Image (cartoon, rainbow, N blue to C red):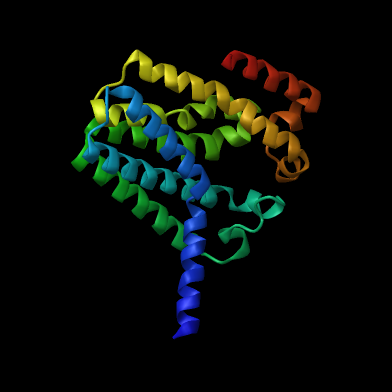
Length: 226
């Protein structure tokens, strides 16, 4: 039935939105960069394919957990009030089940087809973003994105570990580059959405310290990158 197919397609789009596909695409890309920089020539195809798949699934799981925890804040922010949970398009139980399945499948793929080190590092990153950052840091300190940025800086290290089974100094250098890039990126968004964050009660830097100070910090971290 056309109506039934349309409803299923709409539901699939809501589930896809839970994974924050644009963010996952960036994570996969930076993991891929880590893979290509880790070895001379081309990375092993099986490690590349299954490594990226496992990392993508785990990232989607972390994003869905972020939606779950943030749904009340999302409901009062103009940027996020149209997400599946605030609008009621998906129920909390549906989102939780989806997040659990994505995380489980991602871990199984990484453990069985890549290596345990990558699985462990990916799981730590998932917990770091979905639980430590979203549940605690985001609401506790204006330095939330600086500390929590460690999870977001992990993908090139995950890609490196996937094809080598190791983490070297060069992998950590990639981590530091993304780590330094993260605060100015998110603070620039926060400058644009300061009223939204204030309304949601989230202590982003422009809310707690003002826009002028935040711009100084954006400049400082940008200079650090160079």
